[in-house]
Image (cartoon, rainbow, N blue to C red):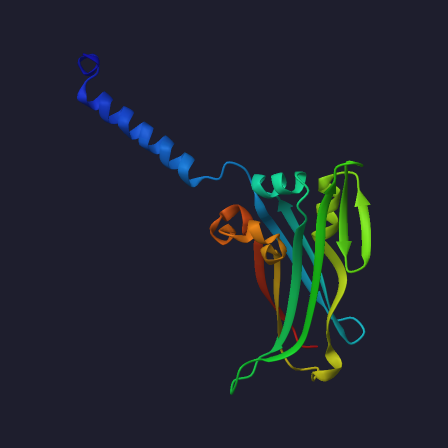
Length: 192
């Protein structure tokens, strides 16, 4: 009965519009979650190789809910500097690593960022994430070991470290897209 109201072309158009709406909803993300952007700059002041980075983080809902329930979340940044060699594997010149612990303190309604033995409290989650997601003048390699005309490159990784979550949460978490926050980038360093 309903089919008699529309002609065959109208049904095809309706079917095509429904299919296009479904495909666009399936392949477009609902909200920008994860690592949106990475700005990375490598400089050579005073015989050292230093790194400046800025990562824009949007925590997925599962990670945010875990934080709100008192589960600490760990992030890590790693920069490895290599010198390319044609005859063997590239030589590692330097390696730098940083890790942070982000936790929510429900009694004071504050966010706490810990790095090593240092702790800093923040009033909002966005302020705490801003402290984690950027660094300036981070020394990653000593250039006294390398000849000045040698080309170098830096492999940089910023990620959510799920290996430090409580053991019951680690089961099956490796297959969930919400818990795989990671960005990687390789930057060429020009010789002086």
